Amino acid sequence: MRSLLITSLVLFIAISSGTQALAQQKAKKGETISIKTSAQCEMCKERLEMAMAYEKGVYESELNLETKEFSVRFNPKKTDATKIKDAISKTGYDADDVAADEKAYEKLPACCKKPDDPDYIGH
Image 1 (cartoon, rainbow, N blue to C red):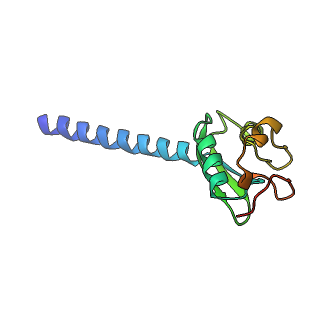
Image 2: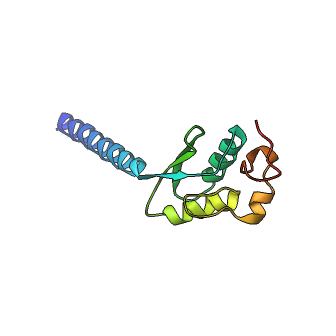
């Protein structure tokens, strides 16, 4: 009887752990979007990725400086592409068809401004 109880308990724990791991893995998947930005340099990359770290529902983000594509993986139950693009805009950068917020853009360092901006300083 005791060995049956122990076996049942071990089986229950194994099933619970497997179910929990599956639920965590499913939650990590989320959705991923790719957004074209006006980012220019490593400072831009750091600034954008840090801003996304504070966005509700965003799991991870990464800016590819060569392509200026910003990849964001997020939980669609907590946020969406529109909110993410707005957050990028409020950081001072263009996000696809959403223009950078003017006040945030003005606060960017000269190297992070757009190349056609008179205040832009190349790298």
